[in-house]
Length: 240
Ligand code: DC
Image (cartoon, rainbow, N blue to C red):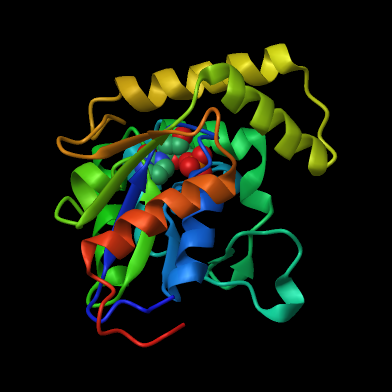
């Protein structure tokens, strides 16, 4: 497989548990390029507020805290290969697993409604990818962060399929929640992400909608790679 010859941006959006993280990471590995999970940044902001005792609704205090915080996202080192897709450092502390809990996830959904919080994180996300090839995933990557990316993909699946996947993911981490509870939480997050005023989750004009309900992760990755190869944007690059 060839590496892209010029910076190549692949933007992926979609609802909770549509498979964005696993697909994006796998795609980035195949192409030998950087993977950025932007949800991890909103989760880190929520963790920061929660652990500092700041109400998630208090946007100006959250902004003050966040402006001084350092969030780093990088591939896991050999010692860190414990099932995580990415390593997240918040002010130097490894919070890769801490940010994955349900409470932090719901907190991220609340905090991401503040336009001022979004402005800070969107600016940082654009800085992170300037001039380099990247697979970036989140909720507003195709619409706001990288609206000119040559590949803009909206990954989705039915709420029932996503709830099953989520329940399985949680089970693997030793968290046993009923299907009913997982489905209810997922619908709540979907509602919050789509109904918010600032950059709601939506399908960008011209984005490729890929329903993953009946596909494996590998099949989704193959379809995307196929499309990229056919685009000719990999020609002339080095072999990975
Ligand atoms: O992808 P995730 O579940 O880790 O994201 C956590 C929350 O962060 C999600 O409910 C919405 C928010 N988010 C966002 O508003 N914009 C992004 N680009 C990524 C995540």
